[in-house]
Image (cartoon, rainbow, N blue to C red; front, top):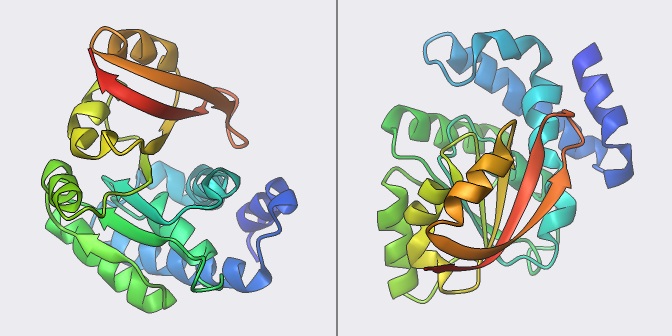
Length: 218
């Protein structure tokens, strides 16, 4: 076991992530490293501490998505946080396990997500389309998500624009943010009404999870 993985396990010990989940995540990390040689999925400088920088950063959402039925992870990229959450929830009771949609318009990254899901034997639906189109179609069919996740994708007001088709369904948004998140909140309030809870990241002192609800345009 790498020192990075050991540190990640210790950091999240209270979440009771199973040994089987950690081992399945090991398969995922190895698969990502193989694809990284041909495709820039994560910053090359973060590969050496991928367990802390990316995997743990995703897993820390687990306590925030309890009683969840459907998750839409937008701009899924290399699978953070959406595919990592799917791996962590793979052994849950199928009747209680959320349906997870990974939305990634970049077709090469979407191909990686499908390949990684097969490699780790988890069930997800990958959409290689624009976020707006996928969520609008879901809303029309009455199957909009009850949680939306995004990591390092866009400023808050742009995230609201992307996800607007789903917001009317009282969705809860969980967005990873770093320095300057307070400025993003101020800018977003120029165009939107919403409630925001700030949750300090377990992984980095200068990062937070912004939990957003009751979003309506001004």
